[in-house]
Image (cartoon, rainbow, N blue to C red; front, side, top):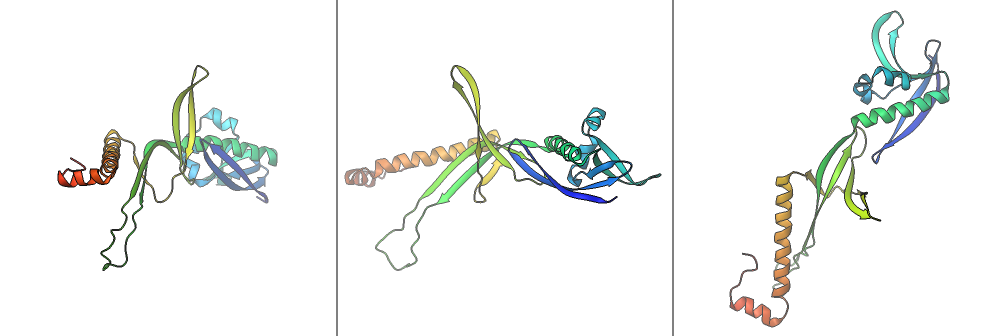
Length: 222
């Protein structure tokens, strides 16, 4: 089984982009052939008879007359045909592995400034924070970086359109499942911080408003 060449194909489905390298081999029985990536063996076994014919797949056994170790392969009469069939097959196998889940991406930034001189009583350090959340769809596939998409329904020229935009998630962000309970908690927290911000704007509108709050022992949050 002489090695003919090393090849690579790139598959992109739903924003998941993966490159696969493989060795092109040759023998008299299968002519040009290549093994599929081991991570997709389970999906390979789910292919229908029609798929097996369509993608020119086969099972290659270690020994010709004994059913020993087996390798799942794609085969073709030409090297170019093999590369094309491998790309089509991997596109199908990747689509079978894709998982989609609704998630919430939470972004929190501590924007406070802290004093290092604890004896300096002339100034209070700044306290600040930033909180936001994005509801999106997470698409995953084995061996690939998950992709996050924000989907919005809108009307354009009298027709309902679906707009999908990519969301970049950083390591500093927290990603949790988008369940009714989780969404309510995040929205309640977000709303409470928003109400606090409004109160602070009222509180610091003028010297009179600050003194009025102090004199009346008013609470910023009830």
